[in-house]
Length: 405
Image 1: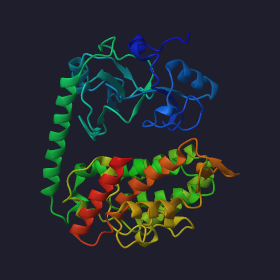
Image 2: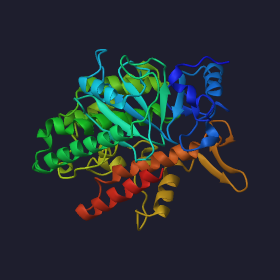
Image 3: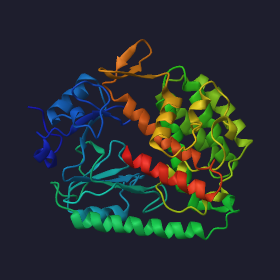
């Protein structure tokens, strides 16, 4: 019998809700070793199957999918020095449920039982700058380490009221920040200071994520565009250049680019981006939305028109040229514009993708991942909107598109 990582998970050991995960923290189907999905039960398995897949495919670890009464609270970077923030210690005590250290050793995952399903919520720079709080009842998986946080319960217990209180607290903080942003004059983008930290952090995270996932043949181009985008933030005075360089090198390493090659690309993109600082002023009047979404709301045109280097695949970042760009058909046009060369739908056989050698059946749900990326990319069009009404329309469309995924 496969040893249990911690007794707290005993009630779930035979439930088909386990996955393995790869170096990018993406779920892996324990049945096939291909990409899994937190919304497709066919890509989940039992605990023993997940552990076997982790060993067989030499993966970093296993995870448990949330839902069906199991919720999770993710406290990211909550213990940068090894000691949890006092707010986190208090939250763990209130929950009275099992909590464990994340793989990095700087984050904490709290698992709890709930009866009410809620939409996921996240709050950046809370309870202190650099720390983030996320809460989910479905649609996510949590990595499982078995490294219990001292002082937490030995079992996964009920936390309905605690989760409700946490959602209220996160909502209150977001509202307060929104009111603070509204009070900032629109022309003072460079002086927004701490209020822009969530935007910058998520902008960096978004660029890094996309570079890390770039396929062979497009890695340098994607890295160059990311370096340009972050260079614009450096030029605006809201991002430290050393931080930008370090994050870009980390992304380049993740997608397999040699360091010397990445170095030249990063320097070139940063230099070009610094020369054209991003105007962040009109973000001040738009409160609300999570950090990842706000990172996509940078004003200015998209693609080459916004100053991105005009590389062969730069068109993938440009909005589809359709009469009404806020419809499901327009979203399909966006998907085609970005990935037509990589995807094919075969009647009777389903989706196929180009794996570099052949058109392979899409058992890894690649098309779903690319559809997710296409939906998130709509946020880049917000800044291109002609006037406030059009911008708000795009924001609503982007929110709806992302919530469907």
